[in-house]
Length: 281
Image (cartoon, rainbow, N blue to C red):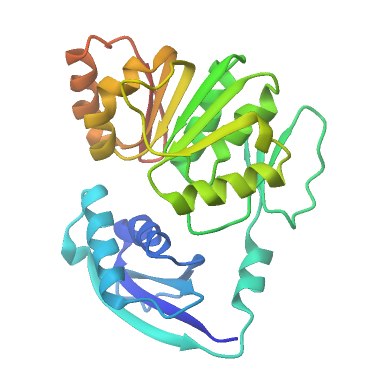
């Protein structure tokens, strides 16, 4: 089977934004390729079917905006066909389990044993954000382990469903609801929940948080700052305990903090992983 690769050359600081954009454009995985000594990084995204190059450009532009980068940080973009290589199998072999406290996020084919106090979450990679390796997901998992003692949890922007699944496995008697505006993401999350044996404990739906959303003891919103800001009133309204906001770059912290104070929610702590910050309100 032939695959298609999109090669992107970009400034070093734009590597993460490029990887995010390629996954949003439908890549099944990405890899960093050898640079040529010009100070740039080379990132390849692999697609099962030929991607529309304009759609990839659009995803790159949106990602650069989210990360606060300039369009000039992406220098070159090229499409090529990959022949005679079982790339997906190679990528699967290279995808390692991610450990966050008691949680271990692992692919279905990884031999990670249950028990010993660990909560193993099996995730089938698909066209939805969240394989447990990104800092924003790790921040949320850490907050769930620390602050969720059972009861109810709402996962807004569930992606692959990792946070909802983690909560349902950590406290089996809890009420867990998860939503995403992308129907494909919800489908992937539902399949992952079945894979983990918790499909009957999570209520998945297509949509977002609204004024009529039932409140929860812990609400997680692993989104982006530009999505979080207009949703903050509804997110706070749906929270009767703690609200976790993630997907926020360090440069965006003042903006989120100021809006929280405006809404009377200035009692919060922040946790950081690299250039990413999560608020626990």
